[in-house]
Length: 396
Image (cartoon, rainbow, N blue to C red; front, side):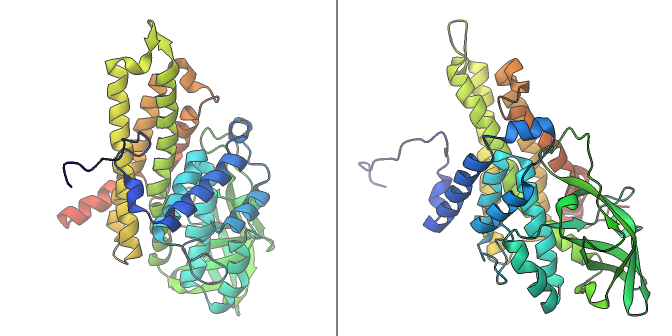
């Protein structure tokens, strides 16, 4: 750079110039999802959160389908075929509105649709994916059980053959979208090991009672799945989804979206704190002019934008076919943990106002407590990385 070249101005919203890494199509995806969230979610989210409901979820799903946000990184069958980075940017913008909205999209696309797209038969793909991509059918993903979360190999849900049919019995717990889903991807023990099944939710013996009294992800549909002698035809099984590699690969895809999404919640909280610090006056001047407040803002900005850079790096690796599950664990562990800390620090800047739903900070902080746990707890991701670093398995 010549001495006379003019540097671009410093942008507090993009202090590292990360937008320079994005092409016009990336920016168009980001801006489209951001505008939709601003119009359809942000004006209502505090009310939805306070009431513990997500009204109009089916309408929201259809709108998200029209945006191309459902199964957007999948190809064919009505899916958008977007890049991993574009999908990540969409997750960031959705979670900047609320983690529950991003969870709706993640479970639909990265778990239920991804399972059918990768492990399903052509008939299963043709039957379900176009309608799911359009948001006409909502999907859910049944893996976690009341007594088995981090240890899915010990699941008790089982499927037994009865002639040409399968009979499923068991329970799944903490299932996003469960009570509004038209189809469930359910994982069960069989005499040949763990297999995945495509289960229409109107099947006799299937029910999905909604879980209430949550203090996190309140603007999200969370359910239990109950399978009581659910009879399925032989072709309900996912033909390529044998063993734990099936559900674990789906989880890795969903965790990738969380790497981005958690930074959306962090960004929203940081922006709220920054705006507040510029306008809130104490001792005769804005609190943003005090050294301790500036130190907090600087540290929050560091972790926020390092996290976005990490997410971008992992997205480019995914697009190149070089992203390993251990690297996804790296991103999920770091970004969710740092996002929670950003929210907590933002709350201190807002003082007592930080606990009010007039601001997004406490809502994001409580949501992230769930995000920290689902798709792999902190401890599980630490052990994934520990094994990768040492070559020694400490899981058992």
